[in-house]
Length: 311
Image 1 (cartoon, rainbow, N blue to C red):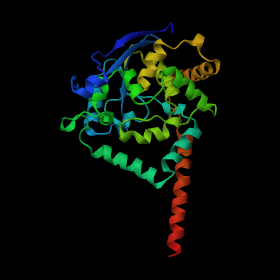
Image 2: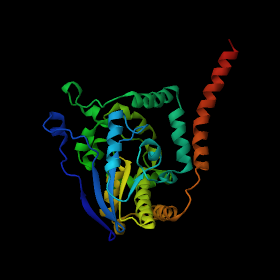
Image 3: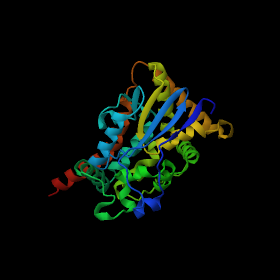
Image 4: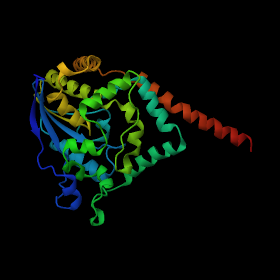
């Protein structure tokens, strides 16, 4: 795109073979890709935020250290990052790019069975109680332990994307748009780290690519409104490589017309919200989420009450 330019990204990435063999040291850092979009320099940090900010306390501390050291006049974070991490100055309302039906489906999926409810609850408890990541413990480096470790950031964002089972940015954007139109494949990615099983369950409803479009556009416009020329964005992993592609590789001339129309709708909404004085109401979104959760919970409550009365 003519209004975008790549300025590079953190150096020092290694291959998976080097990482697993121990040939490469693990630097305790959260890396960033730097792009220039609509006249604003954006440092984009991809974060494995898990359910509570990270799968362990050590990783969450790394994120907060990166936020404290982040360059630029403003530090942006995706939805709820302001509650998960200290130092986020502007929280982006990317939840607006999750349709109400998808919000309903996400909660319905998460609460559909007692096992799923247990998996999510146990995952949150485990994240809050785990002090450090497992990668390299007892001298053993295993791929399935990488999902909450700084070791993940030793790999390039493109390599991390493939490792996590996500399609290339354009293919993923097309799939997101097809899903919104009621088609597309609704099976989630398979990540080697078992701590992330919950993500595969709800990924089809997360609208990750279109939220990437929204956050990049929103942050650039909000920075312009507030007079900033350099910003840092803390977003979930995958959004970062999406944004690099959106700023440098997104060719509107060769993009499917329906996809481009949906992208431009998201862009307009992001710019409008970035220019607004008040944040959008989440009432309908929360109501849809509660409805999705209440249906299975009501069933289990009713079943339990019926069994208790029949004693």
